[in-house]
Length: 276
Image (tube, rainbow, N blue to C red; front, top):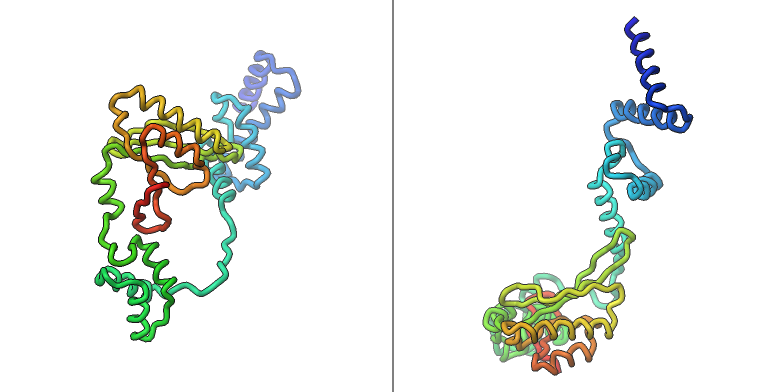
């Protein structure tokens, strides 16, 4: 009796609401079926085609209707991050040439260089041969450079941290980083920063950072620096050896009396070299 009464009430409400089209009635049925399935299945397994369809439909579905959506915005963001990670994942190929140096031998070379500041690559090579270890002088020189150790006897110069701490006042730094859009398009962001105050002085975004665009970003920065009396004290520009920086980029700063300083190639404790 109660079920019959409930059926009659629901049918009467549907008739009064004006739902007479078959498409609208079908949508209501599908929504109810979805609610029933959600009570039975905690976490559905989605295929790639399902993710593609749901990601595309999320752009058309209004925010107030997301309660009926099977995924959340956080899930869509996680799918996008997975696509970006797959885009930048390449198969590793073993580099041809000689086998890598044993870590113990590398550590021994660095120890000899640090404890004997007057020993050059040839002297360290001879000492290693006395121990039965055969390493060429070129390999020893490469190991020392990657560790930030210069040739003897100038191995006791300023380190990277010491240089920044003593010369932070008046130093600009610039660098690129990448941003992936929702369509996996790579955008390059150029950032200028004051080393002493950690203040961001300029930002530029481009999908094709060629020499003309990079030079224009340098000019825009110099216009802002010249308008600010506190920033006119800049003396050095610190940058890496990225090929995006062209000669005209350095010439903009040289014309304003700012010297360009390049970071040295090497993953450990880079030292500083002046640009010509």
